[in-house]
Amino acid sequence: MLTLMLGNESLVGLLAGAASTGSALVGLYIGYQAYRGLRRNDEPAMRYLSAGMVLLFGVTYLLAIVGQGMIAFHVVSLSFQDVFRLVVRLLQLAGLSLITYSLHVASGGRTSGT
Image (tube, rainbow, N blue to C red):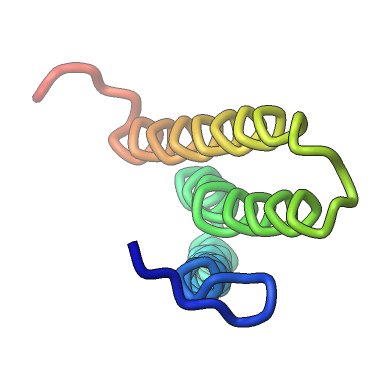
């Protein structure tokens, strides 16, 4: 297996970090646009949608990047990796739940197809 090294970090790890950072920035932009939609329309569904998008697309990626960096630079021990993973997954679930609830609110709370 060929591993390209750049200092102490592999090229693949560097690219993964860059992709994660890009995802976090794009996610925060999506959440910001949803927030702007909320300010224009002031609908409850948009409030939940924008909060869910910020959590799902922005906060979770930022937390994952920060956690990965803290572990890589030995600020916290590797044993905290599972804690970061759990918090990220819980925030993803919360974001998805808020988006799902926003769709429920937008449909007027109807549960049937009528």
